[in-house]
Amino acid sequence: MKTFAFFPEAAFGPALNSVGIAQAIEARGHKAVFLSDPGFLEVYQGYGFDAYPVNLSEPMPPEQMAKFWEDFINGHIPNFRKRPIDQIDNYVKECWEAIVDSAKWAQKDLPGVLDSIQPDVICVDNVILFPAIKQFGKPWIRIISCSENEIEDEGIPPHLSGCAAGDTACHQAFRDRFNTVIKPIHDDFNAFLKECGEEAYPLGQFFEASPFLNLLLYPEPVKFERSVPLDPARFQYLEGCVRKEEPYEVPSFNANQDGPLLYVSFGSLGAGDTELLKRIIDVLGRSRYRALVNVGDYADVYSEIPPNVRIASWFPQPSVIPQVDLVIHHGGNNSFTECLYFGKPAIIMPYVWDGHDNAMRVQETGHGFRSPRYDWTEEELIGKIEACLTDPDIEARLKATAGHMQARNGPDKAADLLTGFVGD
Image (cartoon, rainbow, N blue to C red; front, side, top):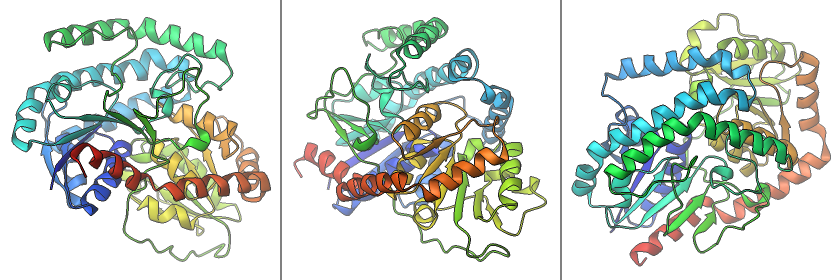
């Protein structure tokens, strides 16, 4: 039995993607453990894994940390209305400042934690290098659970830009603005790398491809046409990586019991945008549909729920999506790939990060629609829902993509590739 250590970013998308792979690793008789921000320890422990704390920021009580992120998101809600390029000098900048700080904090704990666990393989799902992982002396695998364009290529849209594939003017404008704003943060990170005995990265780059293996969560049916194709000896598409969740029974509704079933979720952070969710609930309440709506930790602010809508603080999403007819979400990569895996159309209302990229991609590949987060009318939203439910081209494309992804089984593919590093 070998030990595989997973170190995902402290966010539910990367965390749950790694859970799916870890489940497949353990099914092969090996041990999977997690290195985790203290606030996420219970997530992994809830799936039965051992988890070891690695501070990624100044330690604080869990309730204080939760309040910090709530305030962070609420403070940025006005920025959610902006174009991706106009989010660079506010949300994106502040995120990269926090990400660089997380690498510095991790370097305090990681060497000791790795020494105590003695993993045979380390899998890191993040956007930044942790020098201790690269220097541990064991194969380290990079997992890319965000959009595929996190691995840069001059011929595709830059990460976080939301640009169309062929809009090269948009590509260049975003890259130029990003590099201008990010340079002081990048200089600080390069100084940290030098302290750790690592070479400096080119401007705009905070991580490198693993020399061993890089696993992209992205499915090949929606991949970008790169100017330099990725070498399959080092880069493999996982075709989604859907974890196993508890079964979900769709509840009964007090209206529209036979109507099409929608699932609405903007993720744990996006749930803080309660005014938008209230507006969507109001529109759906007057429709012919039924809806399951994920409201995160904000259930107490919803006083009037239409009879054809059910809200909850959490849903076992991989068990819910197969049973619905359409998903409205924020563009998180798990939601993006799970909809494709189960052949469900999506309307993506992005607000930040690679949600912009996935919203553009779902539309330009014909698997659903991108929608402005706020500047839409009731008629426009209902029109997109109806198109998703009735368009035969969308249905055929989703059926083909789902068949392709399900035939390849991302978690098993990842486990096969990873265990190859320990002779299994």
